Image 1 (tube, rainbow, N blue to C red):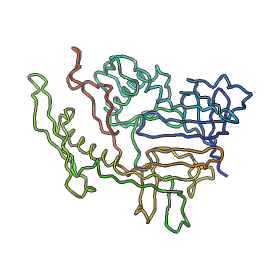
Image 2 (cartoon, rainbow, N blue to C red; image 1 turned 30 degrees about the vertical axis):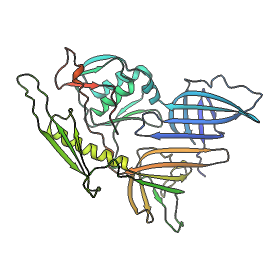
Image 3 (cartoon, one colour; image 1 turned 60 degrees about the horizontal axis):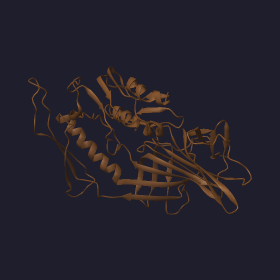
Image 4 (cartoon, rainbow, N blue to C red; image 1 turned 90 degrees about the vertical axis):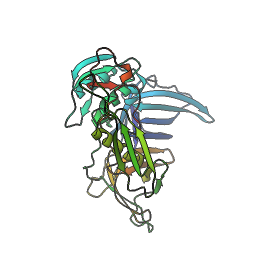
Length: 377
């Protein structure tokens, strides 16, 4: 029998008897959120450890699914009892809420940059999943930058993206499209082999284009580097079957190769938003042939096979987000948000912010970490 009970570990104590709970995780959302509600004895008191800011760990069975802190403690008196609701986020919340340490440094590797940003805020478990991370001649974090902005822009400048693993490890890497599917979801009309409670498929054309063209130019850098106009690159989306062009001016793409990669990225970003499959499955653990009875919890970043003649689906998809819900008298379910496989990519795209360059700036060598979020990463 699988154990998919959700428990909250706080100040050395664990609780798992919830009126209701919800655990969200999404690779595209910086902070994963959670909420649990329990009934209190009207004659009792709230444990002193239950207060905002306390570190917590959430588990499904014995497996961690989220490490973070309490954001909000809410008490509500209702007829016949008192409800206590505790809300929080994973460790990304600390990076979103706090300013980054202000520093300027020379010749740093990506691991060194990440450590300087997050370690002062208590993030010590870090893993860089990259074969080659560029060493930057100059790195500058300015007043007003949040730690998440600084971290994400440093990652994107190397073609990577940050997220937190269930055990609280900060990972800077990218999707692994070579990983084997963890399970096969089946939804057929006869229902005999179905292991999915419901499927919700959405395919919207509104943000998609048959071709994306990027226009750019190089920037002058003195006598030895002349500005070059007329950089142009296009990328086509064959899934859009009629003429829907889009032209983008991107001043950060200063070579034809950069413009080509940017056009490809923007095209795939639109496909990422356009197509989404939501599958509701029972429980919170993966139950697949060949796995032990106690399967691992669902988590974003997995690849999942889907088979449904009714929906015209037969292939492998990427698990972008999942939501676990349940509670007393409520079904224990997980909603899986699936995207087309190999569509989510993160290309190196530094933010140069030339209008804020100081006298120590080095043309073409600054890893700029601004507070302007990269769209649809």
